[in-house]
Image (cartoon, rainbow, N blue to C red; front, side, top):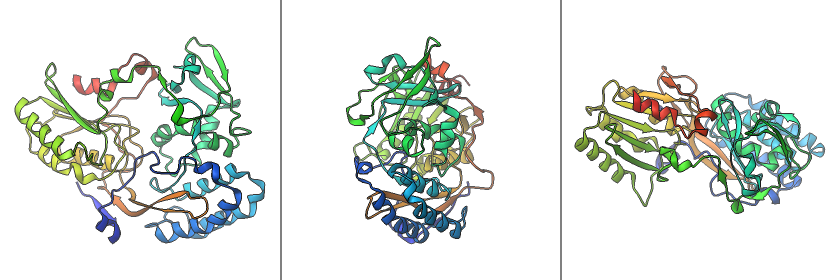
Length: 413
């Protein structure tokens, strides 16, 4: 596989990864509650100049003059916006850069107590608290009487990556975020949201939940997640030989190492298991891999390319909406260097992208701005998201029966 990397000398020296996990890390949990209109306005120039001078190529999708014009528009119209609306406007300008790794990180401590997931049939509640147990398995159809499709369109304006799979991956956290819903004028106030659902009995339900500190929410799930095989071990990297099918399942959930369980030890044990058990196939699950250091898996990919498993039907790689950044690069490497067949959904993000993530902190709001310091390009054979050879959509019907259709396909073929 041909990989082209353009990275700053600082990034090469530090050995930083190409991307970050999809969820914000090490951000003040209560920062959103301390932000004021004045703080945002005082930080606008710091944000704009930081992006303009630190980002590898910030104006490949938006002209520099248009970018600064948008910043000025925020200043000129600030009196019309409340704090949430003003911060959302800044996020919308950031989205115009169209870099999936360049984001404004914030966390609101209070959320509506739902875990939403976009299945093939629509957006459903996978998890909630005891108070709302009856909503498990319900389908969302409106937010404050605004059809869910319109709400999704508004939320999408915040996302630098308009890839449909990225929208599906990210939409859940925005739909239960009081700040975002208020800032997009989908609600009149942060704690004033009415959701409309179609329940499991095909009845219509309207619920006005309270936003709760996420640290105090004990989530109940529609299904037992541990019964889904890929969730049976919470480690970042693990494998298991299944003698009834004579295959190895290998979950590679992160391109970051684990100090307590170093990947090299997992890799050594995996190679030994392949040598001793001589399985007919290996199934590599990349569906939860949000990125990091692509080179961590390179030695194993090289070893696998020389293995008896490197044959038609010998290697399956599971990918999906949460496969991102370096997770995509590793999946491409497996596709190009072996006979691997990709199974599942298209990935979030692209096969070529800005990466090498660094950040700076805005002085007044203390918001952390993630930005790219380099560019990663795969071969010309790939454009846009990485597409599977065999498309297996994620359906609510399968989830409700605790069926992992992509894994079942890989086992059976």
